Amino acid sequence: MIDNILSFIDKKKPMNIYDDSKDNMVLRDFLALDRTIMANERTFLAWFRTAISLIAGGLAIIKFSEDLIFLISGVILIGMGFVIGLIGTIRYIRIHKRLAKIKF
Image (cartoon, rainbow, N blue to C red):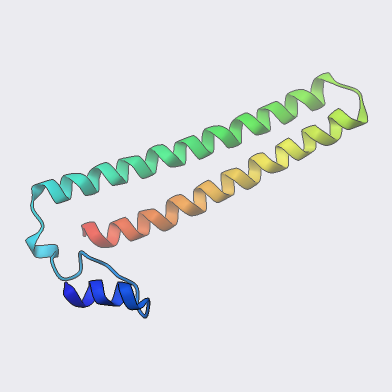
C-alpha cells in the first residue's frame, strides 16, 4: 500500500489503491463502489439526455425555419449532439472498465 502511494507521488506508474487490499475491503468499501458505479450510470444518462436534446432542438430548428442561418445552426446543434453522445459513451465505457477491475 505504501508503495502505491509513493508511486503516485513519483508519477512513474499508475496507482490503484485496491490492488494490495482487495481482500481486506469491508462492506462499506463495496457499497461505496456500488454507489460509484450507479453514479457513473447516472452521469452517462445525463450525457445521453443532453445529446438527445441537442439533436431534437437542431431538428426542430431545421424543420420550422427557412432562413439559412437557422439551417446552419440546426446542423451545428445536431453535430454537437452526436459528438456529446460519443464523448459520454466513451467516458462511461472507460470508467466502467476501471470500476469492474476493482469489483471483480
